[in-house]
Length: 141
Image 1 (cartoon, rainbow, N blue to C red):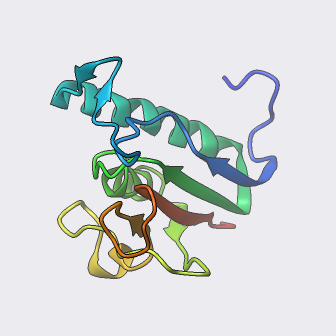
Image 2 (image 1 turned 90 degrees about the vertical axis):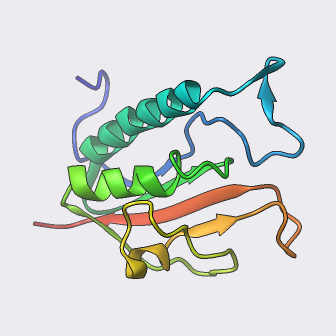
């Protein structure tokens, strides 16, 4: 139940949900403690719940932009792979401009899909913090 909102009523949703923020320099800890693999997996699972809710709210033909400020593939490419498999009404669409790097292989995305997501690495020559974005469209049928 999504209190206060009707299903399939949003034309566009920007889902920039809570994340581990491992793309922010020099943030490698949260509250002074190193992130455990368990904590990172838990964050990715929470984000999947947000994705599921966003898909319910998105109208057919609508756009979902999923973004994080982390370089963790569990929260990025793996969650996009989850979204595409769990919600077959979604497809990745090109982003303009495309100035980041391609996504990481071996994360559940096809080679073509890896080329449709953008990854920004803090060590790249763009000199940005680390973040990720994917643009998805919900089919009309």
